[in-house]
Image 1: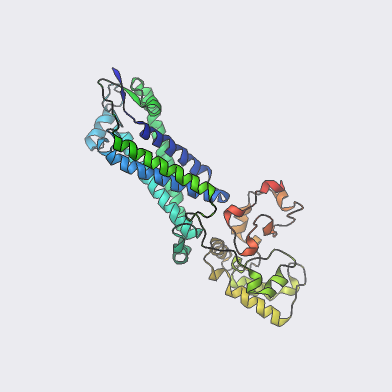
Image 2: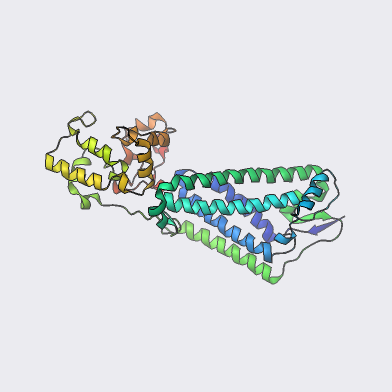
Length: 371
């Protein structure tokens, strides 16, 4: 028995960077970390691009053609799974299927993530699809989450496979090989990279590092840029701002539907316990502005989800919707009673851009400031 160099440095670096980025992707799934989540997704796509080329141009055992995936090989492996004799130097048949599945599902998860970012959030390279497919945003999100769940299952299978191999075939050093590249073989089976393979690996590593550096140091990354821009409501309707922002947060018109705005404006004499009556002409002016820019006329995520939450209910406040309640259910009650918040209706306490018509995830204030 002898040591053979099976997994090259680029293969091992890919493995651990891929594992790290997948972990970070799951750790950044919260809304306020969405931009980081997206950047990590693009970084994973770069790694997948490398692995695709490496699967055809890389060394032996890393090439897809060296993966034992015939039905006969699978049957033979399962039939002899408890046999400690080494039959496969690189991946075994089951590991080959799991590896291909992980790569394929990861690619699909990233692509559906890019679609979801563009359609649901109006961000990134596919933000133009928002105006066409925004009503289907939840479908794309659900597909992305489903694929992420499948990926977790595959990763668990991969880990269990490594652990079982460690238990059943410990003398092969499979686990150690992903750290040092060496496996114990009957004959010398080592691989060696040629200059082209070294350059290919260096090129993709440089691309990954450059992308991450650019993404973390620039404020205008087109891959996560939003199609939505801050609005100047005073320039659009000064009366709306003067009357509605004098007592509370200036709620964007697209945060309620037309029916809700008509109901609210028709009962200003009892506006949440206060008399907020204004003359008829001003009322009509503001109502027309609200209806023109209501949730029905917006493609923003919050607009669609609030409309779906309200349906036919007589709701005139965002905080009365099931959508709002679900989004804020984990926030401690003491946050809403904090001296700088005081009310669930004080949206701008956490959403710094709401009075500019935006509710961007990255601009949500950390609630620890109110704890």
